[in-house]
Every structure is written in C-alpha cells, then in structure tokens.
Length: 63
Image (cartoon, rainbow, N blue to C red; front, side, top):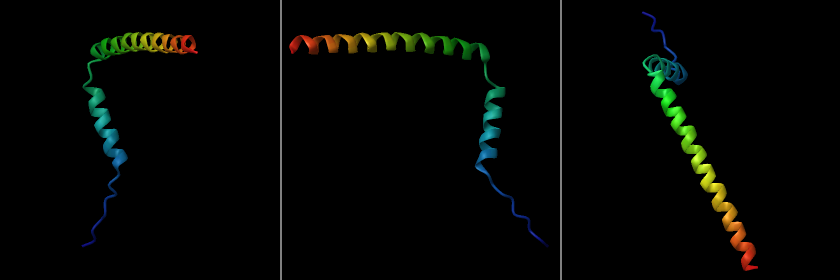
C-alpha cells in the first residue's frame, strides 16, 4: 500500500481560521469599534502634539 504525504501548510490553516472568524463577525459592532478607535486616536494625537509643542516651548525658554 502506498502512503500519500499531505503537505501541511500554515497558510491554508490561517486562511481557513480567518474565513471562519470573518463569517461570524458582527459588522455593526466592528463599525462601532472602528469609530471609537478613530476618535480615540485623534484625541491621543492631539495630546501628543500639544505635549511636544509645550515641551519644545519650555526648552526654548530655558536657553
């Protein structure tokens, strides 16, 4: 009897897992999450830029 070797490829397993997860995904919840992530990122960026600006301003005052 001849045995056939099956090539085990992690790409096919990853694709199958991703397809199953995306098939069961709640898209309205995903949209809400994306909106919250964008708003949170904008708030973080505002604070980061303000902090950098104030830091540079304080350094220039000290010189």
